[in-house]
Length: 323
Ligand code: 2P0
Image 1 (cartoon, rainbow, N blue to C red):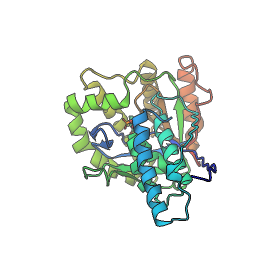
Image 2: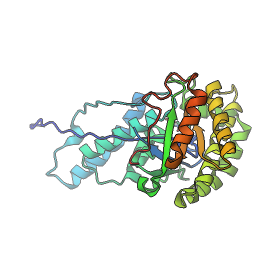
Image 3: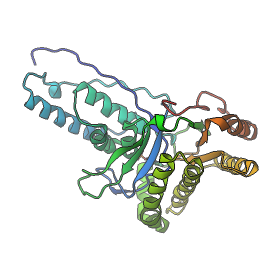
Image 4: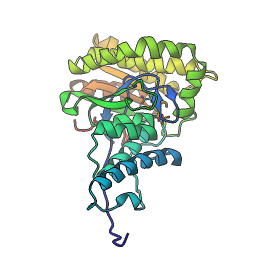
């Protein structure tokens, strides 16, 4: 390399909070899931070195292929890469920070290498960093199709609808605790796969039908259906965590108070105005329609404000990206 030019590329990637949850791997090395999953992206850390290595190996191989086909291109595949990553969400608190981190890493390096691969192709690489990262390659409503192949070649993310499809849908994030979670997703989901009897029922009988119902709800902008499946899926995900040996508890008393508050509000209004969902941590994500924002946030704020130090803080009203 005679010419030591510096090339750079930067990007951002959204966190995503799944409404049909990914929980369980059928291949831990390739991060191949035991069920498909689906998420809207929300507004805005790479993890273990081996996962980064896997992503880089694939990205460099694609660049090398491009260089071999176009000999005039600089040999970027031989360059050292310096990565700077910033995260404006609490890390490892069950708010999809690793998803955004790996998606941004893969997107930025693909930009740097000028790779022509589609977001769906790149999602197969991001998936190897963190399973849920494959969904953060897109900005709108995204499904991660679990795929069947043992090499992971069909386990990738596809766009269900762009963010602009449903501008009324908003999300508020209630940061109950920004502390790191006690059980990592990787360890937790493997324990669930190995010990929970309820898990097989979820992966085989529930999620495939729910994926179809959720796609239809999004397509039709049917908030009632969207909300019903979102809450049911969150509750079943936490049920399989509880059904794990030893049991995994991600929600706490404040999380449960948030569930009761939303259930009470929906009953009070006589229609579904809010839908809660919790990932691998105690923080609540509440989906609602813009017209109901005051109602939902006001009610939650009144009921929970004394218990939630950061309520109304900087994370309290994070609108979905692009909305
Ligand atoms: C999801 N979660 O669908 C689910 C819901 C947590 C609960 O994807 O081991 O960090 O890196 O593939 O992607 C969190 O798991 O796990 C997750 P790895 P990841 O968003």
